[in-house]
Image 1: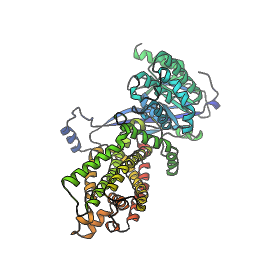
Image 2: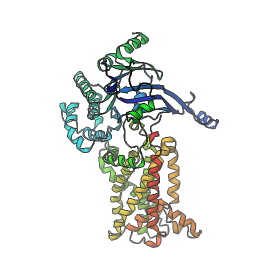
Image 3: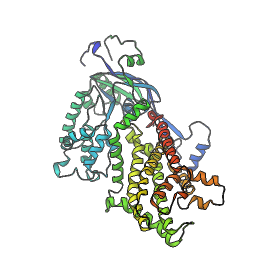
Image 4: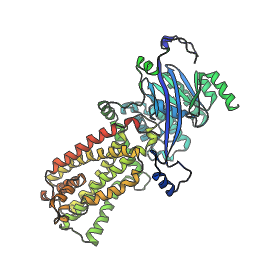
Length: 259
Length: 298
C-alpha cells in the first residue's frame, strides 16, 4: 500500500464499537407447534418467543479516502451484515457508523419485478437507486448494451421471468452498475454470467472503484481480494479478528482455514 | 494498520467524525428534509405503484383487462345476491339501493386494501429496505397510490352501474374528485400508521382482516345507517355516520346517485371529511417518520 502523508488521510467511514443484533420471531425453541408458541407468549419476560442473533460484535475501524478494503471471513461471520450497517440500511443495536456522503450497496435485485419487462425494470431499478428520469434515459441504451440482453433478439421487451438465470443476473448487474457512488460496497459473486460477461463486469467494477472514494468488497475469492484491495478486515463470529495490509491478513486467514 | 503518526492520533471516533464532517449513517433526517427527500423520490413512488399494479395481472391471458373485469364481476355478484335473490332494498328504492351498495363496496375496498397493503409495506419488503436507500415512507405511499389507481378502474364499472339504474351524469358527479382526493389522503395516512405498526408486529397482517370486516359492517356498506338505526338514540347513528369510512362512502353516493340527496348525509359532512383526511395524513406521516431509522432492523 502506498504511503500517504498524514494530511492525505481523510476518513470516509468510521465504525465505532458497532453491534448488530437480528431478532428472529418464533425460533426460540425447536418446537414450531401452535401450543409451543402459546406457551412462549404466556411465559413471562420482555421479549417472548424472540431469538436474538448477535451478528456483529463491537467492530471498530476507520476507512480512508482512496482505500479499497476487502472483507473476508467464513460463511456467517457477519461480512454482509457489516456492509449493510455501514450503508445505514441495518440499524445498529449499539455503537455508531459515521460516513462521508451516502454509502451504497451495489445491487438492485430487491427492487426489480420478475413480471415486468426488462425495459421497465431498467427504469424501475434506476429510480429505486435514486437516479432521475433524465439520467436513466441517458444511460438506458448503455445499460441494455452492457447487459448484452438484446444480442440474441429483442429480449428487453419480454418479462424478466422469461429470462434464463444468467441473463437475469446480467441485467441486474448492469442496472446496479449504472450509477456512480461515493462509498461503494460490493457483495461477493456479482460478476456472474458467462466468461465474456464476467470480464466485462470485472472491468466495470474497476471503473466504479476509480470513481468511488472508498470501496468495500466482500468476497470468498482470495485472488480477487488480492487483486483489488490494499487493506483487509477479517471478521470471524462477528468480531474483527484482524485488520491490516492485504498480504499479511490473507496469509493468516489461509493459515486459519487450513489452505 | 501501521498508520504513520498523524494529528488525528488519540481522537475518539466522535471527535474524528466531527473534525472531517462525517455524519451518522442511517440517521433520521429532519421532518422538512424528509418531505424533501420523499418529493425527490416521487417518480420512484409512482413507477413502483404502477409496476405493482401491472405485475398483478401480467400472467393472465386477458392481462390488464382484469383491472376492469374484477370489479365488474364483484358488482355482478352483489347485484345477483342482493338485487335478484334477496330483492333487498333496506328501506330504499331499488334504483337507489343497487348503486348505493356497489359504491359502498368499491369505496370501502379502497380503504381496506390500502390498510392491508400498508401493514405489509415494510415487513413484506425487507429485502428492498435492506438493499437500497430511499425514504421508507415511499413504500406505504406507493401502495396507497396503487390502490387509488385500482379504484379508478373500478370507477368505470361504478359509472356504468349508476347509469344502468337511472342516475345520469350531471354536475354533482364532479364532487367525486374532492371526495376521492380526501379519501386518498386519509388512506395514505392510515397506511403509514399501519406500516409502522406492521414493521414492529408482523402479526397484524393476520389480525387486520377481522378488524376491517368489523369496520365494514359498522360503516353501513350494505345498509343505510339512518334507516337501520331509526329507533335507536340519534347519537349512535351520528357516531357511525361520522366515521371516516362512512363519510367517504356517503359523499360519493351523494355525488353519483340522483335520489340519494343531502337528507341522507350527516351534518357538516365536508368539514368532517376534510378533518379526517388532514388528521390522518399529517399524523400518520409524522408517526411513520419518527421510526424512520429503525425500519429494516433484523
